[in-house]
Image (cartoon, rainbow, N blue to C red; front, side, top):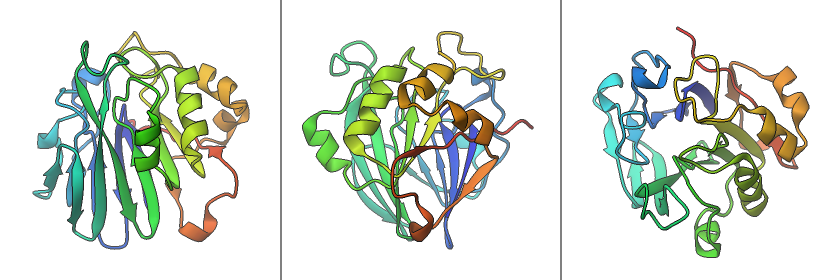
Amino acid sequence: MEITWLGHSCFRLRSRDSFVVTDPCDKSTGYTIGRPTANVVTISHDHPGHNNIAAVAGSPSVVQGPGEFEISGVLITGIRTYHDDEQGERLGKNVAYVLELDDVRVCHLGDLGHVPTAEQVEELSGVDILLTPVGGGSTISASAAAETVSLLAPKLVIPMHYQTPASKKKDLETLDRFLKEMGATSALEERQPKLSVTKSTLPQETKVLVLDYRTK
């Protein structure tokens, strides 16, 4: 399986048989994701920075809510969470997705705004790769993201939704604080354009992996 970060909270996941795009963003975020082809698009919440379905080619099936789905050979579980720490009173609801591709379980937390509850942790258990917001603002802070990683215990953690030279969301923090919280400051030096991984090549202990975003 291959994972490419297109920017903000948008990733392209490629398995042997399918392509999935998560939270496609519009240009107001500062990122240009191009025109990725997908069989499936997941939407964590209804916001232009996360629901730009028109940018995705290939007439994909759209998943936009909690539940269990099997589409194009991809097993998807949507788990209801919230965009803030007041059960959605301020910013509304959010959906975290667990996607199983090529026997690898990937969790995309969307715009999660709180540390998961015990019940949500149980629903998210067994995740191999965690795609988590780390920049604060309208999502969890670096410290809350680190706590979430500790609760879910994934093999790989890929940060998203933080301040970069491309980002136009000025309320976001940079990546440095999260890496410090995780004791993984060297991850910046090891950043890579995409991740190619199989179940057998996953690390034994939790590791932070920084991906470069799409620049053109």
